[in-house]
Image 1 (tube, rainbow, N blue to C red):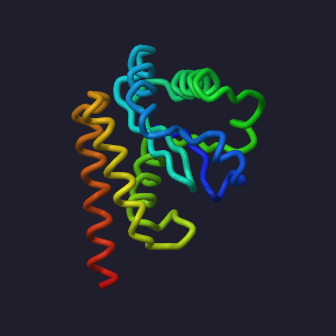
Image 2 (image 1 turned 135 degrees about the vertical axis):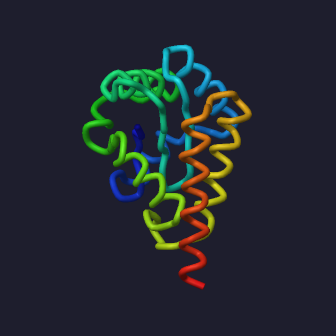
Amino acid sequence: MVLGVSHATAPVEVRERLHIPEESIPQFLNDLKARGLAEGVVLSTCNRTEIYVNSQSQEEATRIIGDELTQKLGIAGDWAEKYSYSLSSTGAYRHLFLVASGLDSMVVGEPQILGQVKDAFRIASTSEATGALFEKIFNRAFQARNAFELRQG
């Protein structure tokens, strides 16, 4: 599943509050794993913060992620209901492919997002927060971007 906010759902001041600095991501992922989430990747850019997790329960994962964001970033209130989106299974896969391919960007097709998704995945892998499922899914998303670029070229 994925829980996130983006340029399409939240104003810049909310996105800024939910930004997770790169140096904080390994600890954030370790804390998610300690709370029972099998795999995780955090994508936090100026236009989006998305947390991808492998969990049996979307409700439980959403609660855990919300608790961690509240604790780590000091945010509270009804931000999740107002600004976030939560997708599971096929919806989460589709969303990742749209993001990695640049089709869910402010400027459709912009190339910078692929590098940001790759960096997010690298940080998660280095932090031992990914496994076989995310290896497969994220590599397929990278391939989707390559196919998009070939089609545009």
